[in-house]
Amino acid sequence: MTKGLTIKRPVLVKVKVTEDFKNKMAREIRDTMQKLDSELQQLDFQVKRIINELERKNPAGIPAAKQHIENEKQKRLQARGKLTEQLKNIGQVAIGSEIVQGTLESIAEINVGDDWEEIMGMEVLVCDNKIIDIRNNRRRK
Image 1 (cartoon, one colour):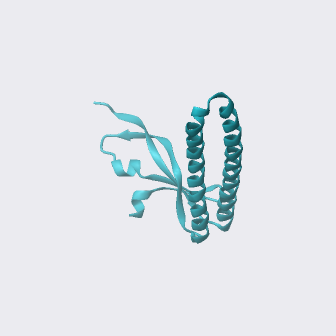
Image 2 (cartoon, helix red, strand yellow):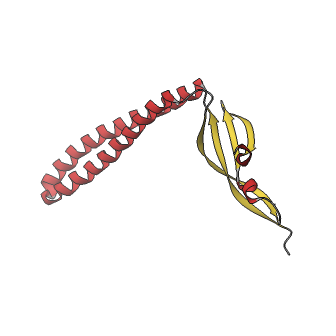
Image 3 (cartoon, helix red, strand yellow):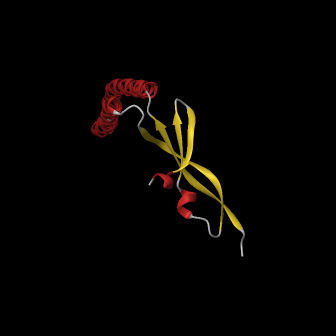
C-alpha cells in the first residue's frame, strides 16, 4: 500500500479591507476605465478609416466591418459598466471585512486517514500586502 501522496490543492486568498486597499482598488478601476475610454475613441477612429478604405476597395464589406467594430465597442461598454458597478461597490465595503481576491495552488502531502476537508480548506489572509493569517477555513464553520 502507498504511504502517501503529494497533491496540488487550491488555496483561497482573501484580503482584509483597509482604507488604503479601497483607494488602491478604486484607482485601478478608474485607470482601467480610462483605458477602455481610449480604446472606444480608437474604435471610432478606426471605423471611419476602414469605411473610407472599403468604399474604394470593397463597398460590400462595409456592413460586416461596421458590425465587427460595433461588437467590439459593445464589449468595451459592457466592461466599463461592470467597472462602474465595482467602483460603486468598493465604496460600500466595510473596513475590516474580508473579500476573496483569488485562488492559488499549494502542494500538500496526504496520507491514508487524513481529513480531506481539512487538506482542501486552506486560505491565506492578506492585509496591506502582508500575510496576516494562514488558516484552515473548515475551522471557521
